[in-house]
Image 1 (cartoon, rainbow, N blue to C red):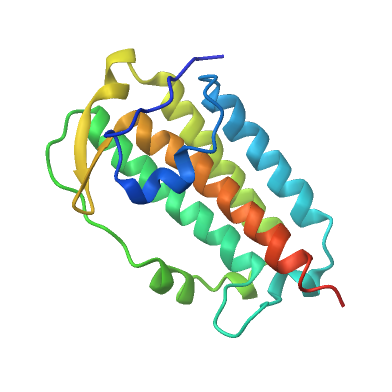
Image 2 (cartoon, rainbow, N blue to C red):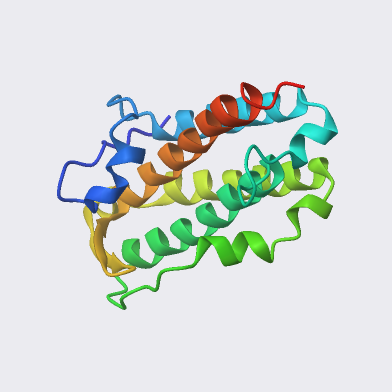
Length: 178
């Protein structure tokens, strides 16, 4: 499997440190992306349907909303890394994650449908990363007013997903026992 070196400080804004630093420094990002999806799927399928629309606090996202958020974030970050990998110098916009969740309709969707979309997007991301030329990973661009390298955007994907899976385990499963 392809080796993608972990980004170094300065290749991403400090706010992304929460996602990138916890990831292993083994270069096996594609494997981690595959394994993260499988872990997420196993966790979600182990839950009763009512838990998938549980909110541990008013205004907090449900598990279904978190899953769709992960998918939306991955699509946006994959687009960003594609643009930068292709040396498109156009500054890329940010996005308002709360609006994306609010208008996602996630809670009305069947979990099998959400997981099917999640897996399709993940497989597409892995194929994109696996097909990039080696020199593309250190190309830099601007997204949401911040400088990123392609590999930093790629590592963001895995770390962002892990971050939300930890939140599900800590806030939804431990606090939401009923």
